[in-house]
Length: 311
Ligand SMILES: Cc1ncc(COP(=O)(O)O)c(C=O)c1O
Image (cartoon, rainbow, N blue to C red; front, side, top):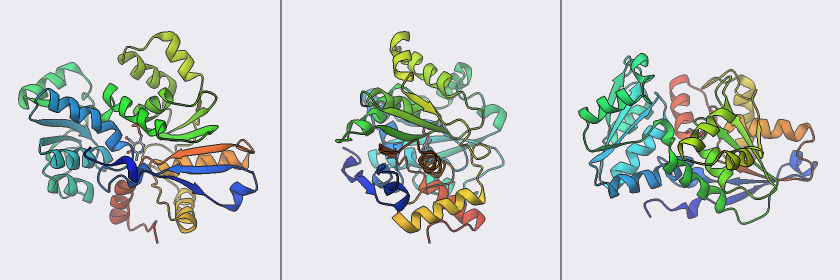
């Protein structure tokens, strides 16, 4: 095993707000797996890397934005395995020195290709993928965010490791890979609470699409999706947008628990969880919060904008 998931403990959080509602909160600390390959990243890469190796590919080619946690994770995992990595980056105005995320990718040996946004928008189109396979033959292509069947199956293992009963799971949603994987292994009567970090995100349609592309039956998809609560308005304005209220919440949570959250993904989810708690929706419930990482991205934003989150 390249990265040990034993570091991902289930940590109980004791806070007055929780106790007064008789709510038990546990955090599945996938962020502790590794500093570069943190959170859901190893889960998504594990079977993709295995697949690339089985197919005797020279390396992995994948896609990401300027602060992509997935790009750093891919660079680090490929470096560790000893295979090459190519990262197609959204934005031809960027370069290797634009921020610490891209610098880290380059330091780990990833070859970065900066493309205009219009080109990047074609990343899931067959014609562009074929063009890339001509340019980079023998490179196994992994979609942005590790969003494919192998990524989803790896994410199922997060929930399979929870060895206690629970009523609710809370998780961030970007591409839906993590939430689709978790849903596959969810306890019978539990609910999966997803927090899309993009504005107007069609969660259920996107989840359905990932299941369909993985050749799941319609009835099974419907049964799975009936366990999902979508928190549609918890995006704080959209992807990578945040407010002072959110930053203060993250700082406060860190000072009380020493668990770092990020303003793009996990901070929005924990904020939503506490809103639900205030409304009384989690009274007498046991809740599992999936820490999907993202601290690397938060540190890059901190460095760029001079924000201090983890004092
Ligand atoms: C830290 C973090 N949390 C959550 C997510 C969302 O996961 P998914 O894209 O699988 O929905 C991402 C993006 O991949 C992420 O980087």
